[in-house]
Every structure is written in structure tokens, then in C-alpha cells.
Image (cartoon, rainbow, N blue to C red; front, side):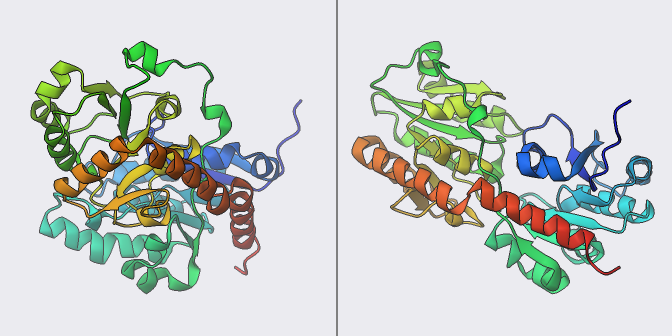
Length: 365
């Protein structure tokens, strides 16, 4: 009979398991980090549905029962917003004394929220989540320094950057260019994200159309989302000509980036952005926006280019600059990889998570 794992049990909160968003990627990388895996017993809390725009008592009960069954020493909650609130209340009701929440994003940052919804989340729901947390983990300086976090969790917040991708996430001989019929002389600009207005797809569509006369340039769009149909309509001519290739959801993002020349995401708000790290891993520069935690990854003019949000003209100019200067692309890509190793070192990040978990377990109750 297998001996029971006596290591401290940490329950990782996955929202919609299988989804490839930032929170799930971070938790998966934490669980698979060798030194952490040897020291802690990670178990999953799989939240298979969302609250549905309201306080969902049945979801809270469902999460509470799952937490009580495992009796974790720490529950690591996936984020703020509605999912974080529901899991925090469930953990409290389940009697879990150590409640760690990671601040990936805030409801007030999203576009399209009603005034009532924004007030509810900014002044009630998310402050409650922060107040009930034992510790708060911010993934960027931007999240740690956010006014709400400083007001409700200033003395219990720490900064730990996201893990970079592992070498195993990159396959050899993937031949993405060959499979898509893209020549070696063509310059590939790749975007990976949910296709929603918040990620800057309206501005991206305008920039692509501004560059319709350029030869030997391709735009690969990886992902899907609510704005996809509108985006397809806006760049329909470029899709028909093959200049824009819609790839949908993919599980080989690293391979696609590895054969790309530039990563591009003109997001309107972002707390950090795992995919910028993934681009740096394969030594390509990024075009990003001067929002949130993005400037903590991209050094403007060194590892990529930063532009103002909502600015399709600046985006057009940035694309044109990197399209026309292959030596600059290569130089920026090398510097991006170097910065990744220096500031997003997996050994350092692993030690920081170990220190965080240990401090929670050893705190005075």
C-alpha cells in the first residue's frame, strides 16, 4: 500500500480546467516545478462552471464541499473578480484557515461593465476577497501597487512574477511555416490571446489594413472569443488573400511563436501577460502597450516596442519598423531572452513561492 503523502497539502484553484488562460498556466507551472513538487502535496480544486453574473450559492456550496473533503493546509485561489470571491467564501465556510489569493486581474479593468457592476466589484466584492485573504500574491508591480490592494491588503501582499515557459513546452521540428505554406522570406507577426476588444483587436485590424500594400508579411491570429466574427469581417480581404491566418485555439503556441518573427498584442489593459514571456523565451521581440505590467516585461526600444493603447497609427508604425529591420528584430529578441533569464528566473521564482507557502504555514494563528 502506497504511503500517504505527508507533505503540506496545497489546493490549487483551477477555473474551467483545460482553459489556457494565465491563471491556469501559472498554477500548472507551480505544480510541475520540481523542488516545489517534492516539498508540497498539490491537489486540484476544479471549478467547472462560472457563477453566471450573480452570487451563486450552489457554486459556493459545491466548492466548500470539495475543500472540506481535501482539508488542505493552504488553498491557493485563482484570482479576483467573481471566481475569487466565490472560492474565498467557500474556503472560509469550509474552515480553511490559510487562504492565499493571486491577483491576476480586476473587474474594474475590463471593458463593457455596467456602472452598477463596477461599483459592486470595486467597492464590495473584490475588497471582501482581499480582506478575507491570509496572504495576497501579486504577479506584477502594477497589481501590488494598485490602490485597492494597498488599501485592503497592504501588509499581506507580496510580488512574485510568473514562471517562464519550460523547455519541454517547445517541440523540435514542428514545421509551422511549412504546414501553413509560409516562405522563409516572409515576416510573421503573431498574436495569441482571447479575441476580445480588451486585447486591442479593433486597433490590430486597423493596423493590418493600413499595411495592406506590404509584401511578404503574414499575421497569425491564435485564439477565439466574442470579437472574432467582427474581427474576421474587418480583415476579410486580408484573410481571403492569406495575409491574415486565423488559427483558432492551439496547444502548440510555443512552436508557433518559435517560427514567428515578432509577437504583437496591443492590449488595452494587462496585469502581466504570460505570452510576452513565451515570446521572450523563443528570442523574438514583442510589440505591446504601455499599460499595467507590460512595461515590466518589455523594455521599449530594447526588448521590443511599447505603444500607447487605443492607437492604431502607433501600432502601424511599430509593425512597419520591425518589419523593415531584420537586424533590429534579432537584436531585440536576444535582449528579450536575456531579460527573461535575469528577471523571470525559474529558480528564483520557485524559491519565492516556497518562502511564501512556508511563511503562511508557519504564521501564528
